Length: 246
Length: 200
Image 1: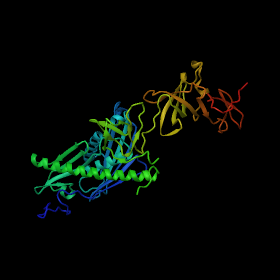
Image 2: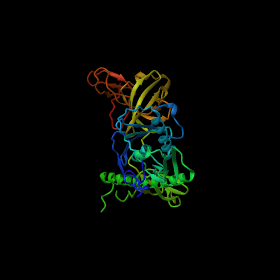
Image 3: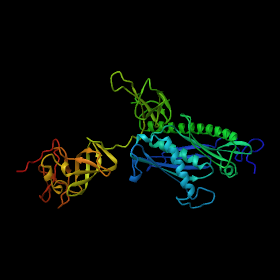
Image 4: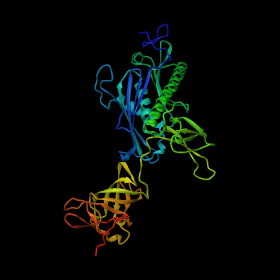
C-alpha cells in the first residue's frame, strides 16, 4: 500500500508535515472539576479531572507532593469493531501509566502535598494517536480545573513511511508497519516529557522524525493555548469581571 | 473592577523577570523568570512591605480548596459521642461552606476550660448537634483536633430528644425544648446579642 503518493499527498490528502484538524472543547462535564474534549481529526478523547482532594488510599499518601492517579479507557464503540475492553487489559494499563508519568512532570505537585489528583481519560473515537490526544485532553482538563502546571505540555505522534517523515499518523498509517514515535514536549521550557517509540528506526532518520514531532507539539500547544484563553475570556465576560472589548 | 484584572494568560507563559516582580499566587519562578502556572487573568498586587517589589498573580477561577487551619473557628455537626471524645464533621470554615467534609474530634480535655477531667461527654454534646468549635491542631491521620473551651464556642443548635424541635438555650449548660418544657444538658455557646436566661 502506498502511504505517500508521488505528488506528496498522504492517504487522507494531507502533506507529510501537516497536522489533522484540531478542536478543543472545555468544561464539557459539570460534575468534574475540569474537563475537556480534544479532537485530532477523527480521534476524539474526553478527559475529566477531579481534585486536588484528600488521598483515598492512605498507603499512597506522599508527604511532600500530590499523587496523580490516571485511568485510560476506550469506549466499546471507539474502534471500527465494537469491542468491550475491560479496564484491566494490558494496553490500557500501560497507557494509564504513560499518561500518568507525563502529567506528573507537568503538574507542580510540590504545591499540593498530601493530596491526590484524579485524571480519567476516555477515548470516544479512535483513529490513531490516541495516547497523544489523551495527554492533550488531560492537560486541557487540568488547566480548566485550575491545577498549577509548569507548562502547556502537548503531544503528537510521528512516523516514517515511504522514506518520508510523517506527522500525526492516523490509524491507517499507524498500522502500516512503520515506526510510531509518540512525543510530548513542554514548549516554553523546551523540554521533552515523553518519548516512546515502537518498531525500529536508524538514528539519523530518528532525529528527523523527532524534530518533526517537536514542531508538531509546539503548534498543538499554541492551538491549546488559544482555546484556553478564548474560554477564559468568555468566562470573565460572563461573570462581569471584564467588559466586552471592541 | 475592570482595571484590576488584566490580560488572560496560559499555564507556561513567561510573564516577567524576578527583578521587577515577586511571584504571587498562580505564578512560579524558574531561571530568574516568572511563569504562569494556571490559566487565568494577570494581576499585579501592591507590595506587602515597604520598598518591596509588587507581586504578580494570576487569578484563576478554581480557587484552591479551603482547608481548616489551626486557629480557625469552624462549624461542625456531631456524628458520634464516645466516652472521651465527640466525633464531628466539619462543614464550614468561618463563613464559608466547604465542598468536602473533614473529620474532627473534640476530646474530653478540650470541651471546656475548667474542671476538664470531670467532663461527661454525653452531657455536653449529642449526635446531630451543630457546634461552633476552634481548630486546635491538624490532629492525627483521621481527624482534626477541635476545642470548645471558650464562652462563645459550643452547641449553637440542637433538637430535643422528646419532640425533635429546635431547643432554646437556658444557661451555660442547659437547653430547653419549647414544646415539652424538658431541659437537656449541653455545652452551650454564648453568642453575642443572644439573651440567655440564667438558671436559678
